[in-house]
Image (cartoon, rainbow, N blue to C red; front, side):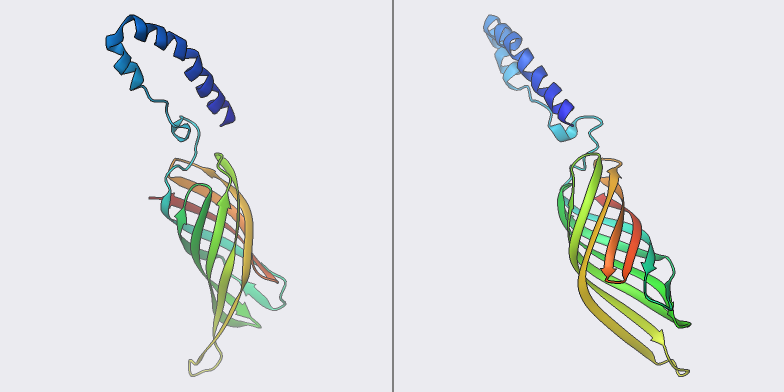
Length: 192
């Protein structure tokens, strides 16, 4: 990206004296030269930058890793809704998975609210931090009584990805959900 900016700047300044000479020799074309516009850096071919600020939505798939004994998780799936630019944003992520503890089947879900930041290059690094609610639901009796256990806490993640177009990106990150629970997830976001 820096090379593109440097080439654009040199080309703009290098052509200025020629344009000025032609404009003074032929005043009728001076208006045409004053209407010339330099393309924006984010529209340069191959920059790969997500240039559309606004809302985005995405899907995530993940795998949980826990240090808690007798607790296991299936793969998770989720959705992301957010608002931001290519560099900073705010997002809500909802995930669900099946789990089991001591052989009792459960469902597990998280709802997280995050502030996110991504570097602005085509291949980017991503960090985010926020608040997450995690919930377990289990059938603990024969008469279908459901016990719900919820917990709130701090969550943070680190990852990276690639911008595949000016409006879409793919990322992978590791998220700390709880002190003994992390999730490694792959996702795609689309800016609209």
